[in-house]
Image (tube, rainbow over all chains, first blue to last red):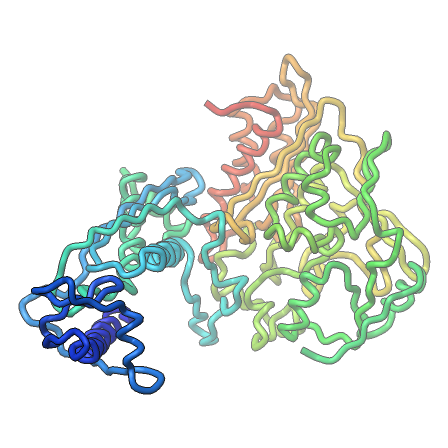
Length: 230
Length: 329
C-alpha cells in the first residue's frame, strides 16, 4: 500500500510546485500563469511560442534558496474499482512414490494499475511467489498440544524456501487505466503471495488426481491423499 | 551462551588428556557444537580446538583403501575424484548434506558425532530423556521426523547421512584415547538408546575420532546413496538409503551387498533382511522391491511418521537399482 498511499500526495505537491513556478515565470513572459505551458526544459506562452524561458532561468527567479509546496492524499475518487485483479498459474512435478512436490514454474499475471517502478514491482511478485511456495509446501508452526510450546522455532526447523526450491517465475503486468486516485496506482503487497499456494494446490490435484486439502502439502499428506484414490 | 575458553592442544595425546576432563568439549568445524552452545544444551567450560592436529587431516587413497582424516570437510569428500569413483555412496551423501557454505566448514568427524535434530532435544525448555529428564516427549508428542525402527526409550533418528554410506562400504573408525588407540567398525560404533539414551555412540571421555578408514570395495562393487527431503535446499533427510552391491557382470548375480538406512532409527540402520533378499540372486526391479519391503518388516511407526515406511521401501529399491546401474522401467 506504500505506493498508492504516497504517490497521490507527491503528485499533488508537484502540481502545486509547478503552479508556483508558473507564477514566477508569468511577469517575465508577460502572460497569465494559466497561459503558460511547461514542457521538458521550456516554459512557453501557449498562443505565442516565441515568448519562452528555460527551466534554469525560471529557477533563477526563486526568492531565497528553494521553493517548496505541500500535497495531500485526498479521498479516492468515486466510481472506479479499487481492487487488483490477477491470476497465477503453477506447474508442479510430484514424485508419486515419495509424495515430494517440486514447483517448476509459476506464471503471475497482474493488474495493479499504473506500475511506477517495473523493477521493484517485479521483485514484489518474485518475493510473493517465493513466500507462496513456502506457504504451499513447507511453512507451518508446529505446536506441542500438551507442552504448549512451538517445537520448530528455529531457522533450522521452521522450513523456509531455499535456492533449490525456487521455481522459474514469469511476471506479466496488465496495466489497466484506473482513475480512483491521481496516479492510478494500486496496492500490490499481497496478491502474488495469496494466489501462489492455491495455484500450487490445484496443480498438485491435477497431477495426482486427488486434492490435498491442507497446507503445507508435505510428502506424508500427498501419500495419504493418493491412498484414497480408487 | 555461557562463557568458555578455547584451548589448542600441542598434540593428539595432549588433546586426549584435555578431553578426559570434566566440562571439556571437542571443537572441529563447530557447526553443531556452536548451535548446541547457543541453544544452551551444552555449557562447556572449555572447547578443545582440534583443528591444528595433523593426524586428523587428509584424504589418502591407496591400494589398501581410503583414509579420511576426521577434519576432512564434507565439500572435499563430495568432490574428490577417487571417492566419487570408488566410494560413490559416500560422495553422494556428502553432496546431499546441508548447504555449500556448511559443507565448506563441516567435517567428517563432526558429521558422525553430531547430536540428533529432535525438536524436543533441541528445545531449551524441554528436559527430555536425552538431557537427563524422565521421558521421551516424541513418543506421545509430535513425531513426524522420528524413528520407525530401533526406537525406545528414545525415538530420535541419527542425523548423519554420511554414516550410512560409510557403513555400506565397510568403514571403520580409528580412535585415540588417554590409554591408547583402538579401531572399531563404524557399524558398531553407534549405540542404541536402549544401551544409553543420553548418547548416540561409543566415544568415551578423552577419546578423539582421528580418522575413518574404508577398505577397497569388493570386486565388482558399486554404491549409491539417495535421500528424500521436504525441501531441496538445506533440509534434513526424511529417509535416506545407502547401498553397496557387488555382482557378477553378465548374470547380475549379487555376491555381496550392504543396505544401510538414514533417518529411520536412532543409529544408522543396517538392514541384513534387505541384503538377504538380493544376495545370491540375479538383481532386477522385483528383487530390489522385495529388499525394500524387507527393510521395514520390523518397523513400528509412531502417530505421525507411518509415511516413512512407504518412503523407505521406495528409496531402498531405487538406491539398490541405482548402485547396480539398472534403469527402472
